[in-house]
Image (cartoon, one colour):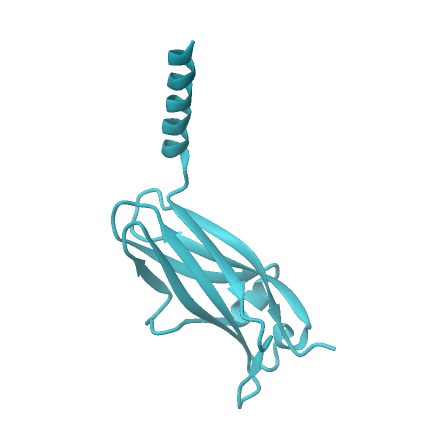
Length: 144
């Protein structure tokens, strides 16, 4: 009986290890201040992105942001602090913190609305079957 119970626990742990996602991430908006108005009227929101690479090797991930409306998505400009482009490299089995800036032009609907739902996407680069994940958050604007 004990052997059967311990064998069952062992099998359950191995199955859980095999089925785990190789990527874990979350995004947190910086709340102080909710947004920054640039000198040209552009509204900037700042986020902290945390990515845990559960692969046994260094991996590259592409970061993007979308909204429910394609026109609003095109109005968003994504910038990663200290990184050229939209791709970051995360060491094997590491937690990586990245500052993320989203800018919306002064005439855009995003800048004029109080809060707009957005989705931040993380997608593995250079794999035959890339791993991707998303997290929902909000973009804060000047809205009434």
